[in-house]
Amino acid sequence: MPDIHAFTANPGFTELLAVSKGDQGPGDLIRTVLVVGVVGIAFLAWFLLRGYGKKD
View 1 (cartoon, helix red, strand yellow):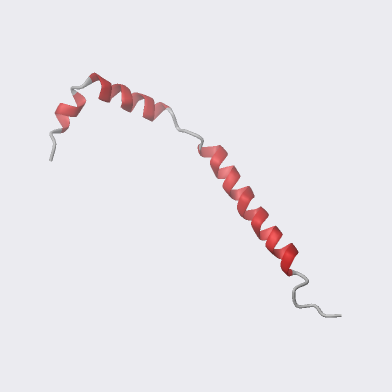
View 2 (cartoon, helix red, strand yellow; view 1 turned 180 degrees about the horizontal axis):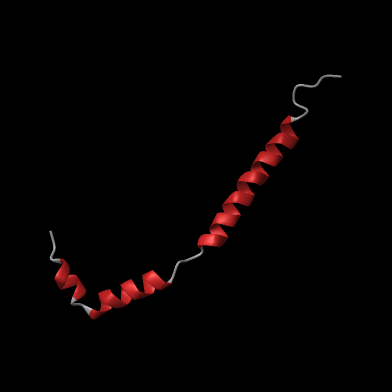
C-alpha cells in the first residue's frame, strides 16, 4: 500500500484536490436532463401504446 504522505507532499496532488473539491461538475444539469428524459420516454411510450389493443 502506498504511503499517503508521499502523495500529499507533492504540490500537484494538493492542487488537484483543490480543483476537484471546488468543481462540482454538471450535477444539476445532468440530473435535470435525466429526469426530463425519463419522463419524456414514459410519455412517448404511453402515447404510442395507448391505441395498441384497440380494434375497430
